[in-house]
Every structure is written in structure tokens, then in C-alpha cells.
Length: 230
Image (cartoon, rainbow, N blue to C red; front, side, top):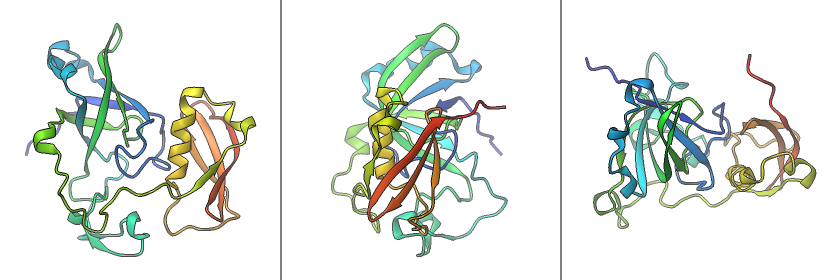
């Protein structure tokens, strides 16, 4: 049996699964960095990649591995109440927990301590996720405008209005404002939860963001610096 090698890891603003967009590209303002493992930090391995605008990431659902698998799952897109075949979904709970994401290349940078790194936009990966391979996106074969999308035919619209009081927003770096608003507008709550009194917490970019949702509006109640990792 061939074992997959972790060639890189993603560095993103999400230390936990909660809040991560459910597909890549839904929040273009989200930035992340592909950092290669020491054995794969050769600039030659990226030669020519600067000519491409987008990239496929092949990665592992490292926090969703299970001993067994189920032939059906409940996609969030259908409210979490309808079962569909696992191979008709992008659920992380699969026989092989492998993910596929298309991201935009922002820039490629050579760092003295990490070698070449790739800055990307629109990633839907948790910080530290192992990446097994990456391949350039080829528009003439990877883009199919006539394709049908089954039970998810179109990109979801922003589900919620977002109210972030300025006193809380001012705590975040300005370059994170747009991404946070867009992530919250996607409604990070599980589809089966709709309690207007419940206070949810989401870790983002080194901060804890606490919010409530009522009448179609998400209101941020507090933003505070996340405690340092032990």
C-alpha cells in the first residue's frame, strides 16, 4: 500500500474547524500560506508555477478521521437533515479523508527560514492541515461552465446580515475585517442550530469572536485576543 507523504502544511486564520467556509473560494478575502516541509523546500519544485493564477490543493481531513465510514451523510447545504450518498457530497467523513480545494495564487515568496512559500486566497483549510500534493489549475480542462451542480447548483448567497460594533472591530488588524465579515455572513453555525439566545464562539486570526444570531442578523458580542497555546 502506498502511503501519502505530507509535503506541506497550510497556515491559516482558523485554529479550529468551526467557522471555516464549507467550500474553497467562497470567501476570496481569506488569506493563507502553503509552507513546505523541510524535505520539499526546493525552489526548483515550483519553477514555472508563477505563470498560473490558481492552484489545486490535495489535502487530508486530519481532524475528521474515523475508524469506519457510512455510505450516506447529511450535507449542511440541505439543512443537515437529508441523507445523500457520500460520493455525491464533499463531506469530510469518507473512506479516505482526502480534501480538494481550488485557491488563487497571490504570490510566491522565498523566506530564509522556510524556503519558498505560496500565499493563496480563498482557502477552506484549518491551520496545520497536511497537504499531500498541489497541481496547477488549467482553465481549458478544469473549467466547465455547462456543468450541473446536483443538489447544490449555485454558490450559496450570504445567509446573514452582519453587525460588528466598531469597538470590537477595531481590535482586529484592518486587513482581516473583510474576511471576518464574509466568513460570518456565510453562517458558521451547524444547520440544525437556531437558538437566538445562544452565544457562539469562533477562533479567527488569533482572536475569539463571540456572536449571536437572531432574525437573519449575526451580531458580534465580543472580540478578544485568544489565549496563548500551551
